[in-house]
Amino acid sequence: MSERTAGHPLTVLTAILSLSLLVACDIGSQGTGGAPSDASQQGAGATLRDRARNAASSDAGLKRAVVAETLPYAEVDEELVYGHFVFPADMVDPLPGVIVIHEWWGLNDDVRAMADRVAAEGYVVLAVDLFGGVSTKSPGDARAMMVRVIENPELADENMRQAYQFLVDSGQAPRIGALGWDFGGGWSLNTAILFPDDLDAAVIYYGQVTNDQDRLEPIDVPILGLFGANDRGIPVKNVREFEEALEILGKNYQIEIYPNARHAFANPTSPNFNPAVAERAWTRTVEFLDRHLSVTVD
Image (tube, rainbow, N blue to C red):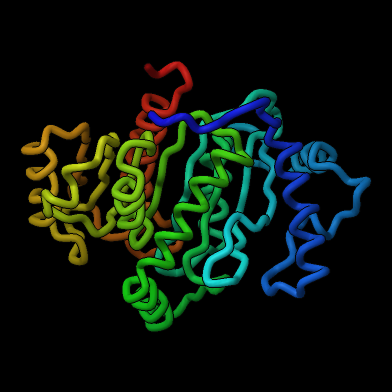
């Protein structure tokens, strides 16, 4: 694990407030595009801690109350990129971080809700946006957005590099994992490839995988893969070939293939949603993240 922080560490609340005010000034003076962050709309007197108290009453169903902010975390191709940043309302010391990566629908309310759920488990979470602020319910539009990313991977790579650095610098996360579904599941694996020594965990929900040993060989990242046996988009054959490559290379991995589960089995808005399988996969996810992101891990 490389050295991630230097000097006196800021608390995440102070860091995020400072970053928000700085970016707000930049937006006002330079006219940079993008959606304004919540922090820039609030005024100097409304601190994140104040909003944490207000948010605590609206987190029904979560393991603990969380605080969520829309914040710029990257600048890619001269455009600010805004993500959903969320952390436990009772956070005092720095916590491990998780990069959450959306499906091909984009960074929508469903993904934000899942990011909140991850944060409620005790993590600082950044749900990234690889689609430039656009989300959709149209499969055709989703496919087009996904293709644009695939055809320009260097922009997505830079997005993820800055997302990682945001959690290091502003989130003060001592350990960082990646978690994604569908399109985002494939990008969770890509993040492990981008940070083969520095990422501490990667969770892949029914994402595209590879058996290319040259690409997988540098990875020193524990991997959890969760797939459906009846997934026509991610065939079991491909998953088994991925698993075999990881085994040959001696990687730290755990692959689960759920009988009678189809693609998007964990998405409550999908017709393929399987509550029992989704809950089992979530339990595995929480256990895996706790095992590999705990600050006590050697």
